[in-house]
Image (cartoon, rainbow, N blue to C red; front, top):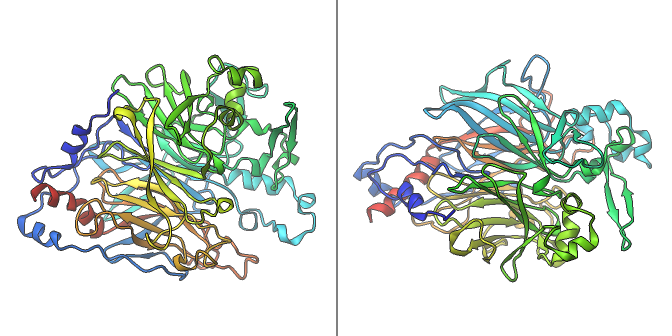
Length: 559
């Protein structure tokens, strides 16, 4: 159960080692999984040149295009509306991506999972809320059905051939998981009287398990089926959603807001109640030496919390304890009905504690944070990095990256030390951090999430469109925040995930043209199809810049 730093250092440290191998016990959202050999040994002459290598980023831009730094290029793998099988097409607003190769010896052929977070009604169902004074009264079940199909996720087989990643058409693995796919609860007690939920939605970021299944996280579920809130007397009240799905499908809000696990080969899914219910951004899993798992996840809403699940049995997301963070005192607080008297006074059992995790966390004294989003484990130090996107109500407009150091490096420790790793703002060149990913050398890659309504407005004018950034670990730019990509108008870049050989960065371009009011006047035309309609898409970013970033680790080993 002890974090073994030596394993990581040996994987990163010596110039004589031409391959990088991430230890199999680290299975982290945004990190590669069991990569095979990657970079060839670097000659002494190349090492000399690399010592003078300066990473040249790009300036912020408001141009309607996906712009990349010199040394990088991209191609589109798939986009909204593309056929993935005879009956299914790729969904809308792709977010988290995760790639699992079929064979560790062949990193260029495998299954790609992609989340579909939400459906912009104008594009997907042709309904524009601005056209009506009371829009929900004009909604139809046909519109909602289209929207429900376009959320959830896609599984597609992809191959790299001649340097280009493409979908294998009509492969037997290609399938959709949608807002209408029946999904069981991994729990002994029913959730609002049911053992099954109808569909998954609001799928933001995610993760991967040590047994190579996908994790997809349900975030802003209240936009679709509303929410149940409780007054001071514990009396429930239903709050309607703004999209109005519950007008046609009377599904309980409690059936959403969970971490969903998907089998990549069968498409079968389950919702993990033990991990709690809230606006999950991601789920990052660490497997300890005794095969028990620790899962970190954040609640992406202002003044909400960071959670950690520690299993009591190997490979279980059911048996164990969910904890919530008190970052001020550095303590993990158990959301455990049996041992916490204050929870027994409020809730009738553990199922209710987990279903109303936000309320339970506040009763225990968890620290309210500024929109906890992605969580990643540093492959060198073992520290936990968490993006806190922003909290305008607290005048934190630019967010930060929080660092958690578990006591003695033990992931199941109940104490830790929290500190700020990087603060957003003009001085550091980024604002509103969102998704994170470490490459094979431990360089930290980050995307930004300035909302579409705030892009190019105060106080975000200096940052222009959203972007992709890297914080090098080695070389002359070590520790600096360097922008390497700029998103199309209204879009954000999400779901960074490196291929097993480290040479491709899979990345989502989500909601380009989100502020479009009329289809004949889109605010973005990316990816520049003939119909000029903006389309969310997944791209493959490649180039020698990625290889140089990974090779820089060998410089430090020779100095």
